[in-house]
Image (tube, rainbow, N blue to C red; front, top):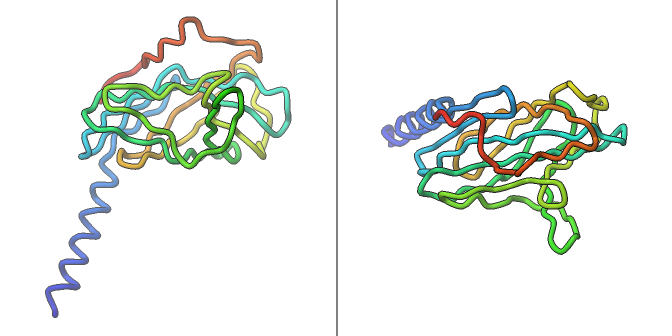
Length: 168
């Protein structure tokens, strides 16, 4: 009986140590994270159009998975306010629990499509400022991303989804 608590303690300590080893990055809307699952994630094309509302905003970015395993964006947290993940199908948006990130593929969050929704903002972000978010995944470690606040009319050219930072 004595071996079981020790094994459990070693397992918990090992899991905590692994959780702290993730690659996360911030700056210019870029970050990377990977895990033993085989997902190799990087983030780019991140921005928030300056919101017209005091309490709500939308966020956009592209998550690229260079790995051999699918992952999922499961939640987003931010000190700026509450953040939810929304899926847009046939022009109708709804909050979802997760969005898939295919192996060797991308999850594109863009205007008119899937996106992040910021609600209950603590202050209205202004053009030139940045908003930091932490992306949470089903398998990969969390990734911290800095989203620059752009003009309300900003639209990226070519929405390539390529990351400014792909280091792992």
